[in-house]
Every structure is written in structure tokens, then in C-alpha cells.
Length: 189
Image (cartoon, rainbow, N blue to C red):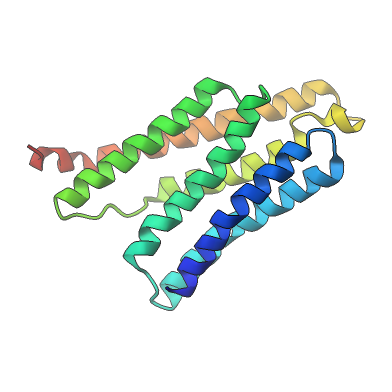
């Protein structure tokens, strides 16, 4: 197993730790900080493992499968918690899940035709902006719970900006995958 794949496995192992910290963070500033730290560390490993894989020629089929799976599990775990807390709307989570299933289906169809669809630029932007947006949401989703002197309206504006950024980048990247790779469906039976 390559070093890059081991780092990806560490990211997956951090997800339950993040989720426990998030659940305990509801009324605890130290646990909010812990959840944020774990989420940031897990997000940073996404860039580290990719860099190592490319730089040291450790790109593998296992890594190509595991890396995007780890990303999806990390961000969807955060979105599910926020959805349960009525912070992230269920319709926005469905947009994200629909895009992920659709792109995965497209990639599987392409593989069946002997073609690999690499991550596009918009997909990388979507992943990075989603991770940054979720970090912002972890901190600011309800500043009143810690008695911070930020008006609730600021929390609401931040929450909706995060939701819009995630949904818009998700839709744009999903559309790009299908527009650039629509020919995959011409060869299917």
C-alpha cells in the first residue's frame, strides 16, 4: 500500500472522530474547536495524499477509488449532522447526493467502456469550496450559543452563503462532468 493511500485511510479514520466531536460540540466551544480541527486536518490530507501520489508516482487504482470516497464521506458526514440540526436543508443535501451518485454512475459507465474519467477542475473547486464552507459553518452556524456579540442575522447570512456556495459549485461541477463526457453514453447498450 502506498503512502498516499495510507494518508487517505487516515482521513477515513478521522471521520468518526469528527462526527463525535460535532455531536458533543452542540453546546461546547472546546468541542466545536476540536471538531473544526479534525475537519481541517482531514481536509488537508486530501491535498497531501494527492500531492504525494503525483510527486512520487504513487497513483494507484486503489487510491483513485479511495480518495474521492474519503472526500465524499467527510463532507457528507458534516452535511448530515447539520441537516439533523436543521442548519443545512435536506434539499441541498439531496442536490449534493444526487450529483455524487450521478457522477459515480457516469464514471462506472465509462470504466465499462474502458475509459477513466479524471477529476475535472470544477470538481476540485467544488471539493475545496465545500470543505472551506463547512469549516465556516462549523464555527458560525449559531454564534449565539457561545454568547458571541455577533447578531443572529449574521449567522443566518453566513449559513445561506455557505449553502449557496456548496449547491452552486456542486451543480456546476456535475453539469461539467456530463457535458464533457456525454459521449460515454453513445457506446452503451
